[in-house]
Length: 90
Image (cartoon, rainbow, N blue to C red; front, top):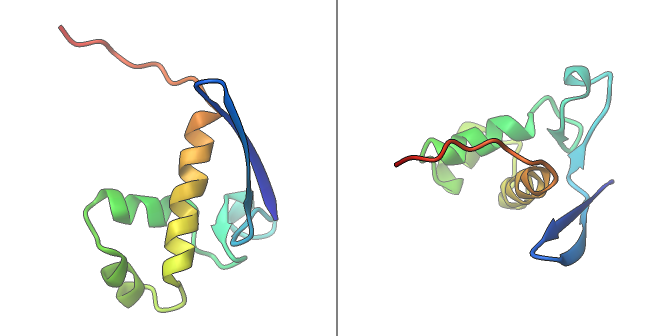
């Protein structure tokens, strides 16, 4: 189980991830779905590329809709934990 803490507009929340695992023996410790060799980043990238949840589940039958949802929540929590340099456009 992974616990992430984030700060969004001074609102502190605690989120528990039960489907995300980090194991140095699996994919070099990259966050994965339920101990499988399915990185969270792969699932998030599929959504970003426009795949629907049913399409992802068809392509990766070992995943569930709950796995996809938790991967997205995990990614959101990870982004809240970091300052990212953004370029301002004129």
